Figure (cartoon, one colour):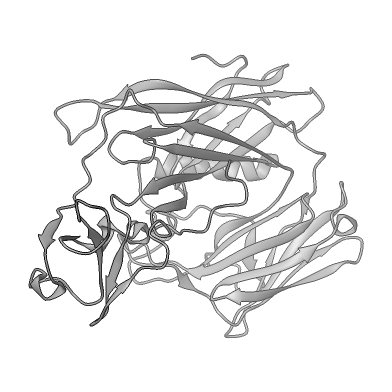
Length: 378
């Protein structure tokens, strides 16, 4: 794959780490205001010790975003450390300057530099994938999978600095349907297939950035994104990747450039970093306090791709041992009540013998997903 223009800082990075000193906790701000009317979200937390990925929420803060046209939007805490508001098209004016104010739970005032809402950025033109093999440090054999790529075709006068966030969703199934449930009393299960199919959605904890500022053309082709291996069942049935493209100001782009250079190959967003990277958020009373994060105002473009089962890959075997019993009391000693049963009656009339096993064999939710089908799924 090649790029059709000079791309600055091409590649992926893990989200910025957030440590300053071993015993120092700092405010962490994740704030992006986009040009999309609707819900806008700001995350506030505190940095955590190294190798601790917990989200240490900053609760009880007062959060507002203002612009130079006189608008002030208050963000309400919807769950610990997560602050949301609704913004209409009238609140999002191209060329207007926006800034963030935070009054922490202990009364400290933080403020960001102003960021201007840019012109709409170019859309993501296409997303596609190719088979690839990756070498790994802890395996004797290379890892097979697919890598996604992206094309973006922009006009010369559109924004030229970009950051991409990715979110993956996949469907998976339990091995067995459910005929009965034993809760102390054997009962027929109302819908044998109701816990068979689940969807799981995860944010991919890497950040991809690029710039066309050094090129005449505002075009990117063959930009490498996420690699999905055959180590999991993600690609076995159906998989979807959502690509969110954010435009960046020059200052914001340089910020993420420093983050990438320092943290390439490091841990997650709530871990610690060896050196402080200054963003655009400050303690108004103590400019020496280190605040982690950046207040971004961006144009947003999204595109989604679906991939049906990739049969060329070899997936791991699901660990689902089934034990045959004739009565619920014959269950293995380690099995807890309640538990599910499938009928192995050769006449298919129901009843014994029964198959039992760990709940993962019967209830797909034990794999971490939900039976609620996403609205976008097709």
